Length: 411
Image (cartoon, rainbow, N blue to C red; front, side, top):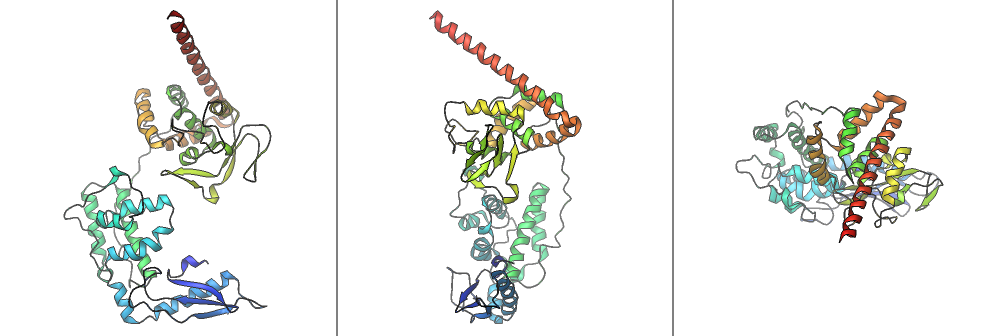
């Protein structure tokens, strides 16, 4: 049990050989206002000696004590907190205490969905330090049932149901409507934890439409061969890595050369030994930032034989092959943009090949389908396909080189 489960404005610390809990009934640190007073520290137990408590044990006792102390706050303090509007609560408590602890993708998700709950300009004020894409700005919609001015104590299920109904009437996708309901649910769940809202969560009973997802069928082996023959760098190599290794696209875009060992001997990088012919998945490129993958996603992936030659070809390019450089780069040396490749390269190929709309997720499902269909010979047939494509590429390069030479000799 860790400190994150405690009220945001509480703290467990050591003093004079004791574990102590300090709880403040006002706003969080850095935003203290009139009326926020400190409750006397609570002694939890010894921090030294034979009967000392571990940090986890101290936090467990602190959690029990904080629930008791918060429940005994003066009634006028609780009333004052519950009189906050939803916009005030999001700005002063929910955003700095809940959203700020999320990763970049989580913060971007909350920012996008909150613009359907609060007025967009209010959300921009809350996230004033975050970068935003200029084309993603949302305008305030007249007559939209925003929750901005709704007091927490006045919130009812009808208010959230009206918001959800308005989104459905405007043609929002069921998944987007579900996200809106879930964000509102998270706001009031946090308000309950912070004793700013009493009663049942008003977003809980809200009724949503059933989500029916239509998934494009995976590609057949013949379609995969046809699509691969129409691809160029970088979508061809990215598709091959997806099909052969199962890596997702943020991991592929964030792959650096130092984590790719194409040699037949072990290599050490940053104190970590990478086995021969192995990819170490350690980082990802997400929304313009290089991040560490979650611990559960860290893994070693053996590079199959058919994938070695495409990677070696990329390794021999004249630039961007240093340890910190990315395997798939733009002309400027930055990681490729998977969304741009999807729009500009994959969609035209899918129309030309007359196959289901290509996507990175579709390649993963195609990998599963082909592996299930072909069994142990899956990688062999894929290897034959890759070698045939490589031969065609080399043939085209040779033809282009000969034409270039003859043109120069005739001048």
